Amino acid sequence: MPVRHVKQSSIVKIAILLAILVSVPKAIFIYDMVSQDEEFLGVWIGDLVYRLVFFFLFSWTILQLNANVGYSKYQWSTSVRLSVMVLINIAVLIGTLSFFEFLYPYVVQIEMNPRDKGFLAFTYTILLLALFFIGRILRLQVEKQETRIENEHLKQQSLQNELIALKNQVDPHFLFNSLNSLTSLIRENEPATQFVKKLSYMYRYILQSGDSDLVSVKDELKFLESYTYLMRTRYRDRFSIDINIEPQYLEQEIPPLALQLLVENSVKHNEISETNPLMVSVYSKDGSLFVDNPMRLRKTFTEGTKNGLLNLKKRYILLLRKELTVRTENDIFSVQLPLIKPL
Image 1 (tube, helix red, strand yellow):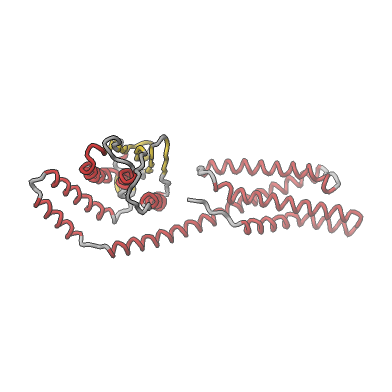
Image 2: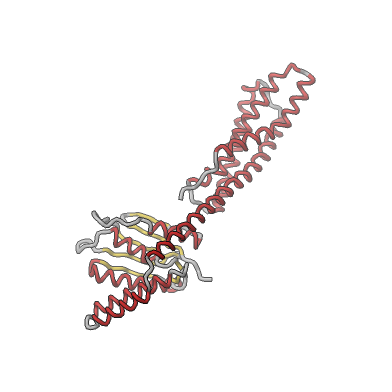
């Protein structure tokens, strides 16, 4: 998800305001000096303008760094980001002071005395602290707005899904009774009977899980077993799945149908043939589940909505406040599903 930036107009306005406020003491000092002796009027005005420009550039840089740049490229943890940002802010402060003192004699045509240098360092340090917190406040405002927009989007999507469900609603008892009737008709055919039973269980699970935000890994694996039975019936030896999940993770929770969706994506997008059978791996590692499959994309396949994985990512962010990670390395497509311990 792209990170929204604080508007440049807001940063520029704040930088100008702070530059003017910080320059007020110097302006008052210049006024007193000029009122006593107008000989140095040009020098003092040059000094004031020089400081204003530097204060503005410094304020703009620090605000841009703390409100936008620090959040746009790297997905760091809060502690790492804070440490890096503090170091960069200090480096900018030291660089600005050095550059200011270096150019000052050439621009203003006078030398800075040690007292003025000390006061300047103090002023920039106080300004840096204020800018750091202002930048953080601006960032929090943007993140709050992002969360509000995302929640509104999810509400609209939920209402749309409910509308679609109502339009396509069929009495579940009718379908179950139909499947039971079919089972009685094919009772002599054991593979067909087993297929219908698995299909009936899958349908029941989908209906029941629709009322739950999270389900246990154990329940998901049972549902996945029924789904893979149907896939093996269709593809026989051309499709296989290896499940290796440590027992301590079985009671932890994930969004319903997450594993089935990823396995279904593997089947839908990859070639499955005698020469290239599909092998899907589902395993646990470091508090997460992983679903891997080799990438041998179909040359032709039925076009899908492409929303399954995207919706699963959104469900993770909304329900678990965690990111679903997708990787492609060495022609292996891998999805990491973080787990959550039940309350």
